[in-house]
Amino acid sequence: MKWEMNENSLFAVLLRSPWWVSGAIAAAIGGLVGVLVREEWRIFAVFSSLPFAVIAAMAAWRQLKAPSGARVARTLDAVRAMPWSDFAAALEDGFRRDGYAVSRVDGPDADFEITKAGRRALVSGKRWKVARAGVEPLKALIGAKDSRDAHECVYVLAGELTDNARRFAVEKRIRLIAGPELARLMPDAGRGAAKRAGA
Image (tube, rainbow, N blue to C red; front, side, top):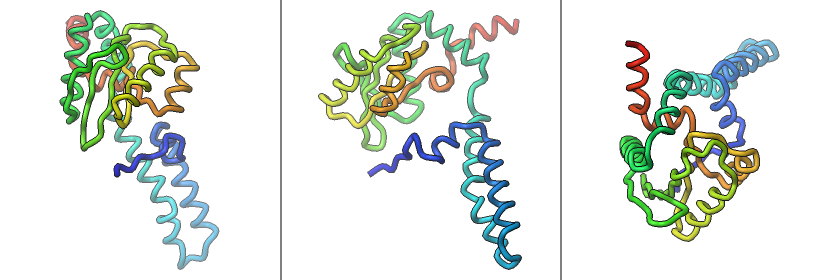
């Protein structure tokens, strides 16, 4: 069974926060424990702050590897200009680079089935150009996931979700690929525009 961190746990929230937040918590806990305990027990100051220091390092590494705002904007512009066939092929390539086996799905509610380490997920991406997506396509994706007995579902978009749709996605644990994650998944999208801008 694959262990998954709860998205609302303290450590999950800190991983999504700027790295210095976890660093500050680690320093505060270490300093506080160092001041409050006897000298021979001060080693516990290091151990008590260590989990937060590790989270700070992990968050810093993720943020360092994250695509820049300019690259995200170029990628979103490029994928919005793509026809479905090109966008679908780029998505397939991106998932395969991440180690997934990818197959197309026939049906209106999901476009791909991706598999990795024995876990299957359904992916919906055909409405990627919609500026603001609502809850209906997410409900349809959940229905497709249940009917195909998949473990997870993934929704790909270049726009935004409505507030209701975002709440629904969190509640149903739908993974969203948008913005920086879409730029990471499709590293070649928008590169031509970047070269022309630099020329």
